[in-house]
Image (cartoon, rainbow, N blue to C red):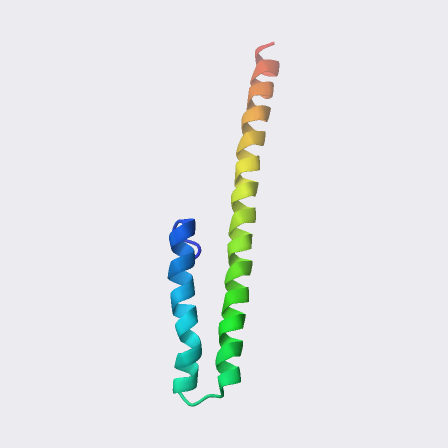
Length: 80
């Protein structure tokens, strides 16, 4: 959900199932600590994934800018 939906909606769509994960784990007979551990690990993993998404978008933006700059310069050199 964090990768394919826009940012504000992604966090709502991600947080709601993760918040329900703790009670669901406890309902299946696990210890409450296990439910809390599951919620925390999913939240940390989600934040890391979202961070990688932001880095990837910034790298793509930088690559496009660099391509445009180098393409213009190389075209000018070729025409001279």
